[in-house]
Length: 402
Image 1: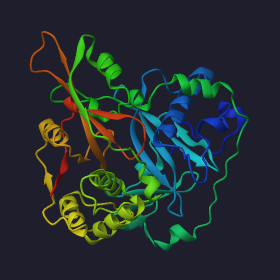
Image 2 (image 1 turned 180 degrees about the vertical axis):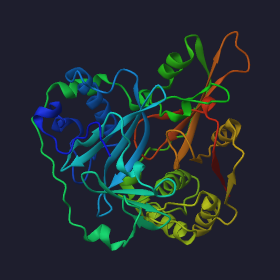
Image 3 (image 1 turned 45 degrees about the horizontal axis):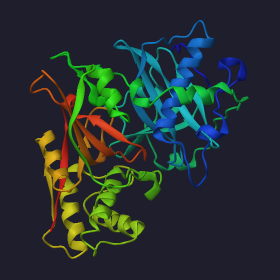
Image 4 (image 1 turned 45 degrees about the vertical axis):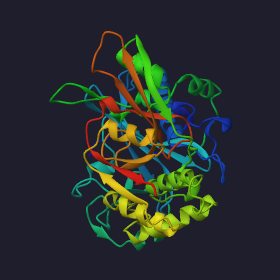
């Protein structure tokens, strides 16, 4: 197998300085861990630096992020993300960004090839990817563990294999911090896919932090806000409740019920206690730390949470035929909703919908642009999705209040 180019260790002579200044995304052991967006913006900086410094760079101005994959180490700790790249519909390699002792760095990259776990012959998409050493991975699929050669290996191997990777840090480039301040948000670097049937861009692949600028840049000028509403629900990181587990649904439920507590005081006043209560109930409905929560069971979980706090008339409902009107109706009635998405930027992820905004343009009828405001569990910043560009698939879990 021929690899176009792969970084195995970070040498200063390779691509200059690949560590951020400590005041950029330096990880604290207890707080201020690098966010999902920090990893992505570091990958974007790496692309831009390579284009500028390396005349043989395989990336150009059209390089965009297509897929984002979580990478865990052999102790099942989240250590980074792989950003798989695309350029005008063609594979443009990948970048693996790791957190190494509190600093983000690039462990591997290629201009053309796919990551090793994509080249493996396992059937379908791996449920989880484990980094063992440079160019060596294990993949979890259907509760079985596979090496790159598709051998079914013992699960204990993940915990017992000695770590063999090593990376060198390099001198900090003082220009990186300024670059990241100017780079904007990550969503503008996410590839816009094309729907072959309609040719309409599926912009739901993007995460949006500045919705008005997004409208102007995407749909042109002349749009004004028609209506909006946002519920006062503090955005929290799912890792703040419990790190290195699949708990986006539990995080969303905790934030929702903590919001409901102002009207239903039986709900636990301590948010950690509330999370643990919800986790116990979710576990009885199939939740696991590695597999997350079955979306079809979220309505049952909501119902049981209401019962836990002696609100027997409260319940949950799942909707699989989704419309913007469902979300708007819930928000207008002061109820958030859970959105479980099967594609786009938040593929296989659950977010809490806490608001909406509608834009209209004079002279254009029946073409309002509808946006949902989220607590996405990955960031505490302002986050939206373009619902007008969202097509399929997922489910909505609603709260029927007592």
